[in-house]
Amino acid sequence: MYDWLEQARWVKLNENELHQLGFASTNIKEDMTSLRSRFNLEQLIVTRGEQGALILTSDGKFYHQKPEPAKQLIDTVGAGDAFSAIFIHGLLSNWSVPDTLKVAQQFASKVIGLRGATPTDLTFYQGFID
Image 1 (cartoon, helix red, strand yellow):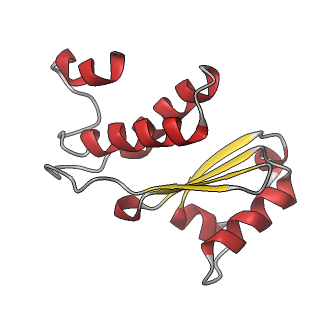
Image 2 (cartoon, helix red, strand yellow):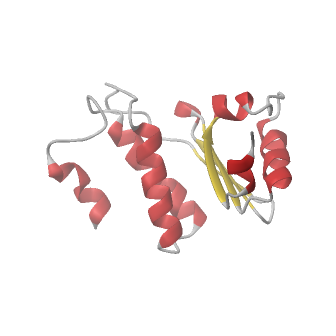
């Protein structure tokens, strides 16, 4: 059942998925520590909607980024994928964890202002390309 976790280096889940995997105590940091240790993950990323995202690295350090209040909430479809795309880009580009987390959170927060997950206006990406 957990073969995919045993083969992973980095895992991104939302809080509900973390609970579905059986890590559902009242202390999310303890749950994340248990999951990361059990599967020997380099990084565990848990997104929590408007509460932001938490990252746990292999050295046991937590990072947190709470999003700015949304300018416009239209549709949350695609926010997790948007976050993941930027986070993977940051990992592959050797960005620091705090920088990666900040930009990933900003991008996901911008995507929730769209209907659906993909903008038709390519200027949407401009602030993230630079």
